[in-house]
Image 1 (cartoon, rainbow, N blue to C red):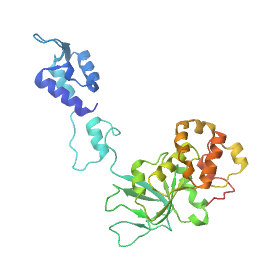
Image 2: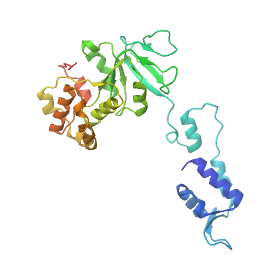
Image 3: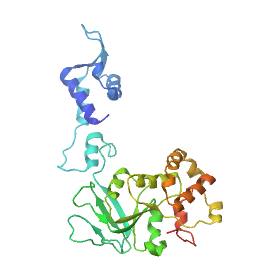
Image 4: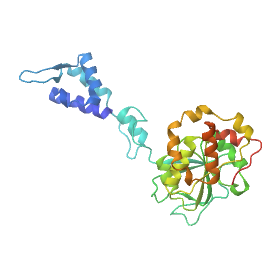
Amino acid sequence: MSLADERALLNTLMSERAIPLSQVPKRLHSVKDQLCLSGACALLIPPGKRSHYLVLRNPAQVEKRLESLAVVDLEEGASVRALSIQANQDSKRGGRLPYVLLNVLGSEAVPWSCTKCSEPKALPMLEMGFAGLILREPDDEMAWQPHGPVIFVENREAWVTLSARLPDALQGAAVIRYEGWLSKRLIAHIRRWKQAQIWLFADFDPVGFANLKALREQGIDARMLIPEISDQVLKTCMSEAIWNNNLGLIAGVNTWIHQASLAERELWQILCEKGAALEHELIAGLAELHWRV
């Protein structure tokens, strides 16, 4: 239910004085119940009618409720969340944001281009900071595209520290943070990055491999960034809880994993045999770190 729905119901009540109960949408039944409990309305069968109606009993109460639902004027082009608050008194119940915001670290070796740029150029990086990149719809004329290696990192701490631990072949790569899942909107942008080499550094668990699968299924030649993993790490640092939280994803990964690289297949087999996951923050912090690149 939206506040616009409630306003429409109350305005109809004020003008018609009675509404057939069958015409009150189910999503507004809680509002109907509140109106009846407060005495503003009542459920009655009017003379000459056979079914129940929501009948106005106290117009002043309904008018007061309408005043509380009045909307403020917003400028043309107001943000999605401003419009959602106006309509629903809740910033999270409106439409999706009209852009994807990427936080990019490193990128010294990766120039970016767009259709309005004369030539690819490096993103401006603040000292001890990162660049923010706003991507609107994939066909936007200012849709930026990287030319070189790009590594998507699942969580913030690994994103901050990974650049210093990268193998020589990926030094200067653009390191981009995402949270948990690669959204369909972000994948739609990545599909247009024809000059990029895409890497994924995520938890080694069903979610991480499901994200890799989602990229590959969209024709993106992505690879998972995988290190050599010692027996000691496998014995002492794996998490059965994380693995068990995502058991529903395993079957889908199993139908696809034969298309993965040798390193990815071998790692997935180890994880399945152990019934446990490895978190990528731990991997990024290993004293001895040798990548299978």
